[in-house]
Image (tube, rainbow, N blue to C red; front, side):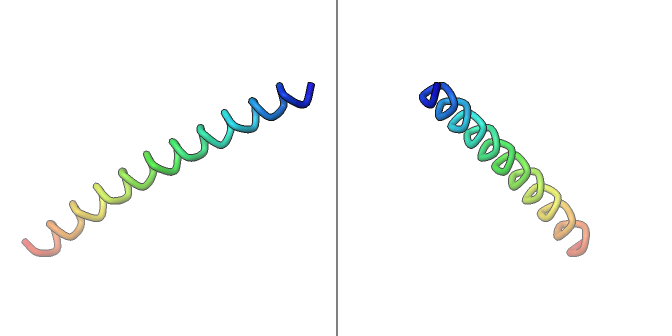
Amino acid sequence: MAKEKREKEVSLVGTLISVLMIGGIITLMWFSVYAFYLQR
């Protein structure tokens, strides 16, 4: 029972990390577009 819970937590952490990475990439993209727009 404890092993199954641990695996579920690990998958949850992996999902959280992937979501944060995707969010960070999107934020960087928006920031670069915004900076490019300001420099124009």
